[in-house]
Length: 127
Image 1: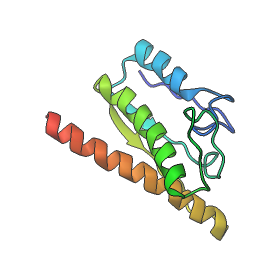
Image 2 (image 1 turned 180 degrees about the vertical axis):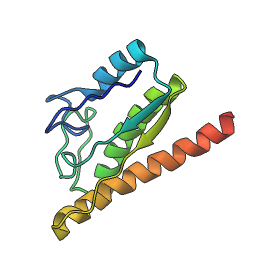
Image 3 (image 1 turned 60 degrees about the vertical axis):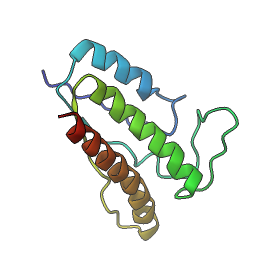
């Protein structure tokens, strides 16, 4: 069954606006997907993230702490789908006309690539 869900101005960086983490658990339980095609990041490509673990501070976009927290979120989503056997595909962000925006999108894409590569290794080992 094909299901598409989209929410404008939402992302993984602001769970108080829309908690995708909880929503994915509902979707996974209901649909038991074989494949998940995910596209996030354009609303996350800035230096602010809410819902960080107690005692954690987030630096600027692209800093080690920002990358670590965003990687934790992307990996959590990836693992939730992979745990039920779903093949996870992350769509990277497009390159924008603005050089500044393109640079922030490349930061997000780098995290997505890292998580996808790590998950591919895990999947290959499990096969």
